[in-house]
Length: 276
Image 1 (cartoon, rainbow, N blue to C red):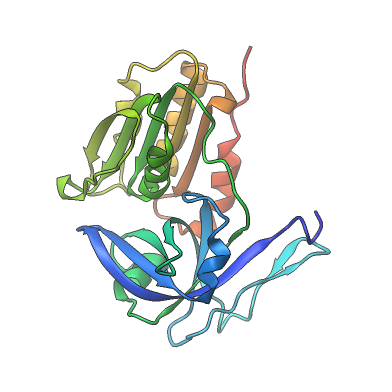
Image 2: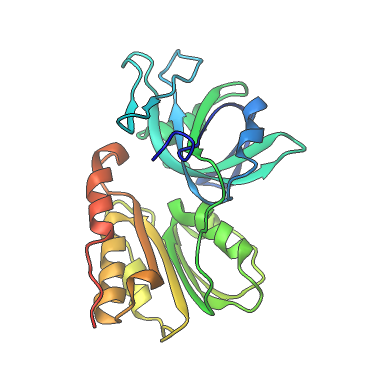
């Protein structure tokens, strides 16, 4: 891959405001000259946020070695914590993007930053430039996720055409964390409540209770590792969904930091071959 083909956005932004959408869901607005760099990306795609160490007010980005196609990390004292998120919206007139965080306490660097950050605090955003397809066209959709998936599933729901039909199953802390997610499509929403998602999830069981479409279908599943694995196995092995009919990815694994579980989560993603 050449340098021209690998266009990466490196945006250093600053917190402009933040608001709790629900008791456990925090929307952070970011502004800065680099917002315009994100104009040509797709709302809902993954990006990397870069959280500077305490006391560091500048984002030290990794540098890409284009010969080896490897990232060279800055020295440890200034190296940011890197986590996977998605920008939920952009307003070029206000010069802002916004990112939603699950406010689950301060044990993780991203949640802790969002809860404690003040106006003017920096955050780095690293992402691939250009548009990307979030989902393929289909008549029927199955959208499944925990609280970490609401940004991407919300973006898909907002983009679906009116002719689309489907079911959206979302697991959040409690009833107060249910959100109004706008869509033109005919979607049946099922909200599940789980105050301890790190222990278990009811998402696989509820998916198994659904009457699923037999053709012209697509499923987007994003949640904790074990739940995603169970749902993927059920759809691919028991229900014979083809690989191209399903996108299933775990944003996190219970008890393991994102950067320590990344390899295992990526390996499991493509572990089931098509049959027949």
